[in-house]
Length: 463
Image 1 (cartoon, rainbow, N blue to C red):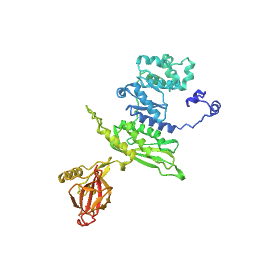
Image 2 (image 1 turned 135 degrees about the vertical axis):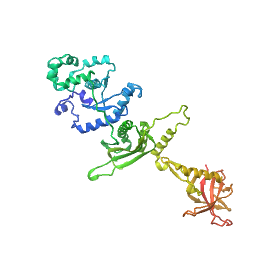
Image 3 (image 1 turned 90 degrees about the vertical axis):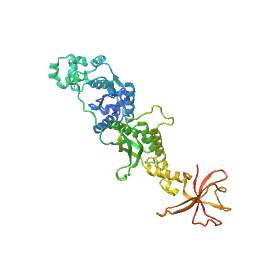
Image 4 (image 1 turned 30 degrees about the horizontal axis):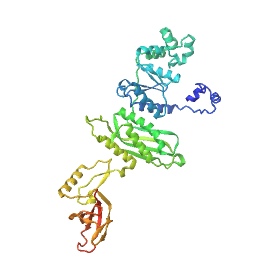
């Protein structure tokens, strides 16, 4: 039940009619144990980012061994805050119990839920027995069917239960009660089956309502991302390719799902960076129909490497920060709008001037050959080339572009491409206008140099 229902007087075991009398606006739902199991598995997977030892216990309880995680997460309070934040992102609330013994921590969490508190934490073994002695016997799973019997013999607390003769208690209540009692006080060891992450990550979530705004999907994307971080931590992997599907209507009016991918130039496992990429991608997304479900799948991963920091950091930041910035720009502007030069070894400028996405790796051999070729030729060419050459007007036998262009360089003759269909025979010049802007213009050699009106073209602009 919700907190509002509890404060209105609703208690476990009431009939639906009694609940409606106390709280007419109450909404009752049929319990779905299958969804509860899936929810517990999702929480356990997300908790793997805080501890490799996570196990599913009875009665919707998750146990974690956080002994080795306290130093990594700056103490128990900081770790507890992060766990509660992750639970909130997943859409759940939890009461916590912390103790040196797993069975005792489980009982403290149950008592906290019974008292409607956030949690009960006892870190000292000396104080733990005192707290356990005051707990009611009904918190033990094996004692729940025997509560009336135990209370009939004035056994209300765990301290009272421990004072009873063990042989008689075993004959009347069975071995399970004594076993659980010994495990709670640390007198008998517990054996746990730790939660193991799946070899592949592919998680689907059903939305509670129809979502028509892409920005509103970020809340549910964070839930999937929390599970992804736990899975990556457990597998010691970093992700490079994420696939997302948004499901729309089903049945007779079925609509194909909306698909999009996140390509990362560098493997990443940091929550802040992945969340920023999701946010930018969803902001740019246009939905053609309401979304009723989401699916997140990891397509490509690589082994995680420990991050190395320099003793004297560079003022402009590390290379990883530059790549994250480029990935953020790609998510915001699109892969076709954030490019890097990848020139080819060719004398023709429009062929050599090739640009590819920053997420792709440049061919190093072609880049080195082109650079060496340009240095040997000792030529000056602009980086800004027009996608399509522009025919210039000729005035008084000189090219004209806003103003009269004055040629300030000798001709650079390019005659190449005879081996394919892009044959070029041109004379290139550097020209300057009245505002001292430099242009790269050329004249086709097929035209007569002594003609009164030679044909000129603008091919590039110098920065």
